[in-house]
Length: 135
Image (cartoon, rainbow, N blue to C red):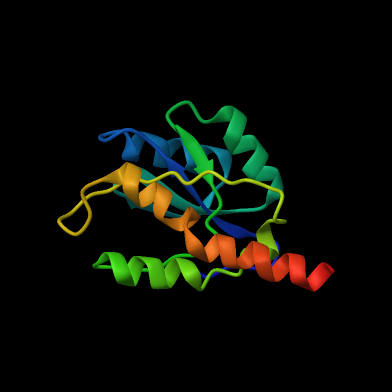
């Protein structure tokens, strides 16, 4: 999905089997570039539609704005990709963040572990660098 400066990519998560229903809801709200995914629907939206989607979608569990996307087939690759995220753009060291993981396939099987993995050393090193930069 290519992004226009006034729009951005969003992902609306849903329950298995409701992807087409959610895609229809998004179409009725005016979303563009709708793409059915596994237990989710990707789409383009502006800020107004982002807010509208959050309170009008009946079949969406969450509406997410991805900050980084990648493919990983093992734990090391996953961790290396997480370490590339420029956390300082999104968070200050005193802020917290949640990680929501949905797994499918054969490479990763423990979603709780994978949700904790991004919060390990890459975040700690960012906090140290950030504190040194502001001192």
